[in-house]
Image (cartoon, rainbow, N blue to C red; front, side, top):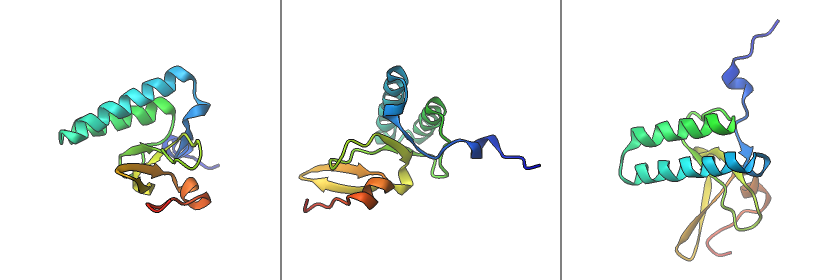
Length: 112
């Protein structure tokens, strides 16, 4: 008989459109607050909010301790995932984030 740790049973990412709207909204609020704390270098508060966000949406907190959302302009992806796996690109002066799936399927660069 195999024993699987509950933390390993949780997925590493989730597409937010699969969640109820109120959960998606709460997740966005937690992530926005985490970003605000990180901008003020309040990293413990930011880390706590990332943990709460992961628990809320039912994914395991990545080893990096930080989540991010795919903001790819090449599709309508709503993936929440490990920020350490993010790929970014600039469109003018705005930085966008691609999840690994989007970066593989339709990589974007500053020239796109």
